[in-house]
Image (tube, rainbow, N blue to C red):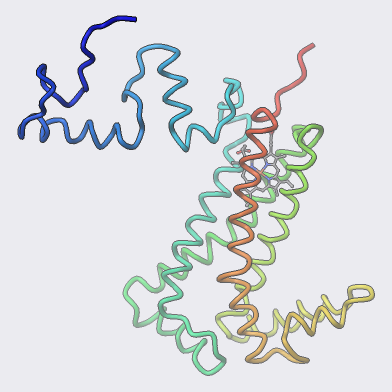
Length: 259
Ligand code: HEM
């Protein structure tokens, strides 16, 4: 082993940083404390160390096929679904500062958002349109996965996780629909929960549990609110984590079988 003195990057040749040395090396030290690798790795070993030490890179499988990185392989639909979900969480949290889930206040608060709150209309529309976009994107992603045969072994489990993600996305959209407490929302939920009551065996109970009673009222609004802002987002976030972890464990994205 070489006995040469190893120089720590932010010290001078005597091993002492000094004030200016410490100041000069501050950005490098901050970078090193987070990433533990050089900004531009020089060889394959350093490259793999950089990947292993970075949380976001580490989400990828150890080996990534070049063709799976091409846009036309996935059309970016999985990531676009994720981005719309992130926009929904951020705008949803901001909307929670104004919204009150009671029949007396909900509709007025929604009107306030449109008329009195700075950027309120923009915020509400961003949330609404992102919700529509997420439903469409998740469905297109599902179709892409199916049409490229990526749902087959060994990815069946992730396909099932995906199906649950799709149902949760629809439920998030449905529960959000009631919250403005306007005529459209009210009657949509009356119709939606009536359809649920036609489910075999548990139909009436399901409708009762969803509404917290026999009709659409304060209890239903509170239930839909809690499901919409807490239960469903937490479950969805957890399952998205599982979905990404499975992609890694299944050896990255599916590729056509070699002939
Ligand atoms: C919240 C919803 C979802 C998010 C954020 C999401 C995210 C992703 C991402 C980022 C990928 C990497 C490749 C790509 O972009 O296409 C992926 C792959 C995959 N997704 Fe999803 N996904 C969601 C819903 C679904 C649904 C509804 C299904 C199917 C029912 C599904 C099944 C799969 C499968 C099987 C793969 C591996 C595809 C392959 O190996 O080519 N995902 N997902």
